[in-house]
Image (cartoon, rainbow, N blue to C red; front, side, top):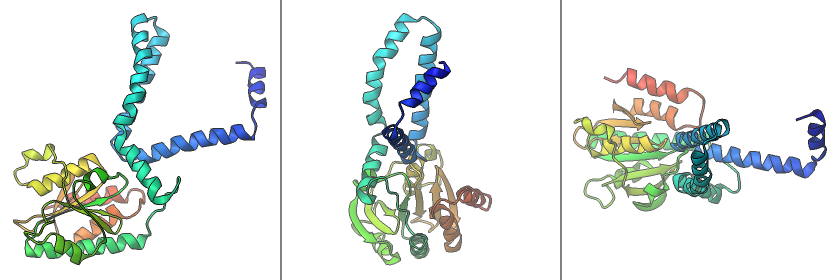
Amino acid sequence: MSLSDILWTFSRFNGLSVIDILLVALFFYWLLFLIRGTQAVQLLRGIIIIVLLSFLVTSIFRLTAFSWLIRNSIPALLVAIPVIFQPELRRALERLGRTGFLINRSPHQNTFERAIGQICEACQRLSERRHGALIVLERETGLQKHVDTGVKLDALLTSELLLTIFFPNTALHDGAVIIREDRVIAAACILPLSEDAMADPHLGLRHRAAVGITEQSDAIAIAVSEETGTISIARNGRIIRHLDEKRLYKVLRAFYRPWTGQAFYKAFISGFKSQP
């Protein structure tokens, strides 16, 4: 492309062209922001690599049959993308409905502090009474499909509410409680079990479910053992066991607060190093 062609291209730019480009850039930025920290990132990376390699091969070599296959596969790929990214698209629509168009209002730090305090107090009392519990804290990845499997509450998070839900033989004690910010969204929710944790005989169903939900999302899961009263916390498919109230508060304060750089990683690693 010559200099005259470049100047001719820029000469056609106007205010609407700039707005058009900014809107397209904002749209793609918003999509990437929504799938950040989810399994969709790996899927999107794989799709991009396959598409780039396919076009590279077809542009270098004259492969008639392969080129025909790529051209006819693109419409099928466009149809498959909404199916593959269905959880992320649903999460985007839910976020639009809760916060308005392209507005991301982060909860205040005091909201997290209050929620953490109530959770730690409840877990300590549940541990002392040997009442089993499974608490899931929703973060960036939406858990609405798991919320739909339980009983919706949408109640303010308090330690008394958690103690009531997980009291033995009550209607909602069997299953997981899902918390969003400082509200109990649902109880008696069904979670996926971890396949990797199946080989560990020390992990019961609650702990396998806690690990399973953190393998599929960026959620944080807390499990209280009904047999031993042990408090455990899971994140990213890994679990820290034998926590007390003080240590649970410290780890949760790092995990559940708004993003602050490397605090999550340092807290998680320190938790594993100090695990007995």
